Length: 83
Image 1 (cartoon, helix red, strand yellow):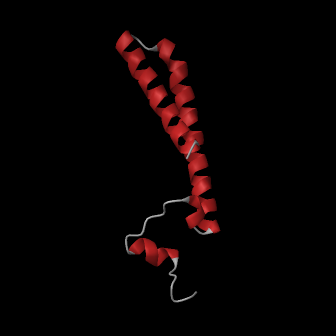
Image 2 (cartoon, rainbow, N blue to C red; image 1 turned 90 degrees about the horizontal axis):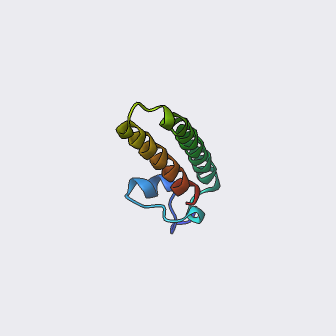
Image 3 (cartoon, rainbow, N blue to C red; image 1 turned 120 degrees about the vertical axis):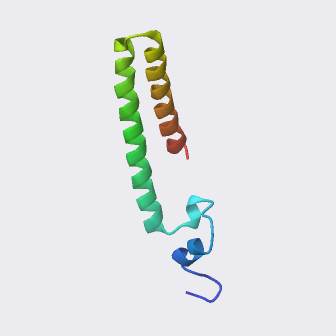
């Protein structure tokens, strides 16, 4: 390591921000991608579970609530997936 660079732990501890995937070490990026993939999978599974329950909701307000949950979960997955 040269005098004009610092390790990522020190950089982040001093308030540094990672602004682009290319600015992080390969190992950190790989771990982050695994975490993001797991989150997307979980959100899509949750969305599918709520989508199936919409027709079984006892009233219109409950159907709207289940629909909103479905939409939010799918939207969260899309935002992370397209990042």
